[in-house]
Length: 291
Ligand SMILES: [Fe+2]
Image (cartoon, rainbow, N blue to C red; front, side, top):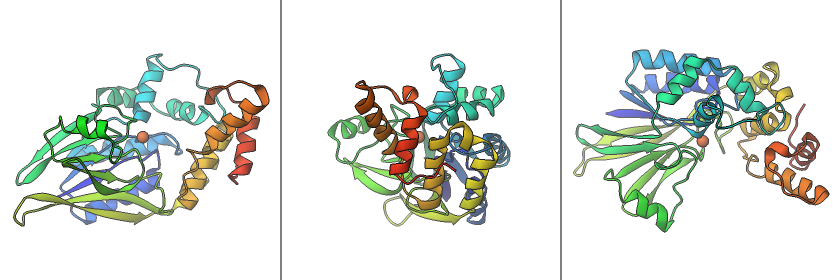
């Protein structure tokens, strides 16, 4: 049996299309989607259309990522104040390009799930961590190991880190499924994981990490054509940079913009209150092109 695991599409419909075609060619019998379907990429409605179509004809499981959680919370008024600009412009663009049907569907999704398979170990799957969509299953962290041990499943699947690989946490194995649409370290190649059930002695899963070529330059062009680059200039430039180079500066540049602001103004401020000029100055330092 082969199961296809897809995570962190982030609205990159071109990468998703390539991964689904690859999974089909490898005769995957089931699909587990680990969340963060939308936001950062252009035209999120194209990603949603692909997902709705796929679930009609294939055996699929879906859970919610932190990005879907943001969309639901914004509609419910639990998050406020999104506006154009590098801090929240890409989220607002995504929200405006989704429908109530999309957000209703996000609302129905659980944050994690379990699945049993004939002749293979049961799986527990989540976005970041089973207890928090934007948590992480940190290697060697005693608290994470303690919490995972409360789960009976021997194999945990997760996304959110945009990395591929497998490691042990206590007695459980953790499989990172990579990122379809915002792949780190593999520019031009979408990442997905195929899990094969193996029956040689002790039943187990063997992960196969697939790198699927797709047109990353076209994905960047869509950031410009969709207007995202104007609405969230530095944020979208970081997305373009990641798509073209595989480097993740999204964890470095925003805190740097924050530190520049703090130095000038003598106060700490959340990303949403950092003026665009500071984002631009940070973008220059990280050689992140906003044009
Ligand atoms: Fe995420």
